[in-house]
Image (cartoon, rainbow, N blue to C red; front, side, top):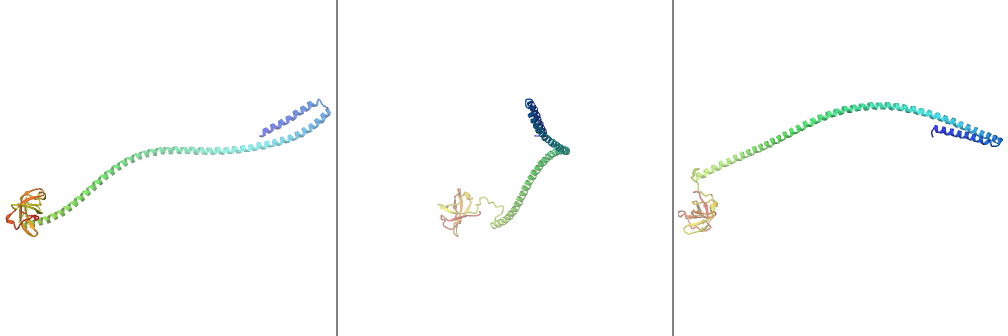
Length: 274
């Protein structure tokens, strides 16, 4: 309950006593005046005491009201001072906020400009990456070409060295062949068609009229007209001239003028130059 409520409560209490006094006075008109006087005196005393008490309480209440008003004025002053401080702080904060908003606007504009620059830089970067990729592809192609060329050069050098070695081998072989030709009375112009390669075989059958079958045939390089010498160990038995050739067999006739002994199945034969 605030101070005003207390004041109204006291006033209601006082008025109740006043009305009670009027009621008593009305009632006294029907009573003994003496008794009424005594009663009124007692009542008056009571009311006087009560009035004194109420006045005291009213004074106390008034004093409390003044104190509370003073306290409210002090609090209001403090609130006003605080409000002034808050207003000043608010003004400062508003100014700071306006400054920050302005700075943010400037930064936003700078950010937009930076974004445009970044987009342009990204485009240039993309172009540079494409150019770099193309350059790398060209470089890789050139490197592959260089590697291929290097491998080719290395291969050619290897082939050159091998050909030189082969040339030297052929030169040695030509020298040996020349010595062989000279030793056999031949030259590079001598016709060697029909001369069989160096072969060794066996007599597989002996027929009538000096005909024999040998284990060498067309697949071995034997052709009609080739001559084979016949041996049995270190014994020379004669010469046979080929008359008929099959893939793996051939038939020849023993030449009488070269015959040195009886030819048997199993004897060895070998090719001869001429």
